Image (cartoon, rainbow, N blue to C red):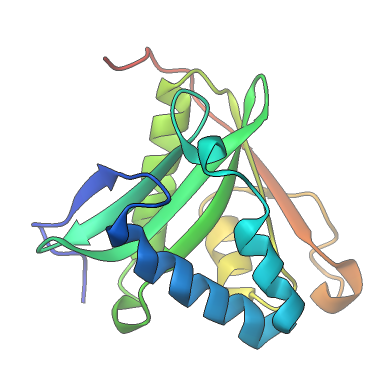
Length: 165
């Protein structure tokens, strides 16, 4: 099943009620894979980090309901850092995460970033595979057991776009 043609991106604030499923499911994923202390990841950054002009949180909506989303925040002057990648559990295996990632890259480039950075955890093989398939350069030994590496960092250069108004 592919993304619905009626699917649209919408910028949102972290406290928007439509973001709640993202936060709830992502917290559940992290706790399930990494234990209760992983809950802290979801409160690690202030909401302003995911707001323009330095960040953004995007939701992919189908029929007004969130099915996927992701965000970036400023990492440094030239680099955006992807955070909060999520696909609703009922909508996985449809290419939605790749679509969100591409839109985050486009939005970050339009905001003037020239590089994108991210990390994923060693117990998230589907995320690792997504970033590799999307052309990200792994900054770790991909032949090593991910559990011996720890966080798995990736980067990708972005084409510079003119800012949108």
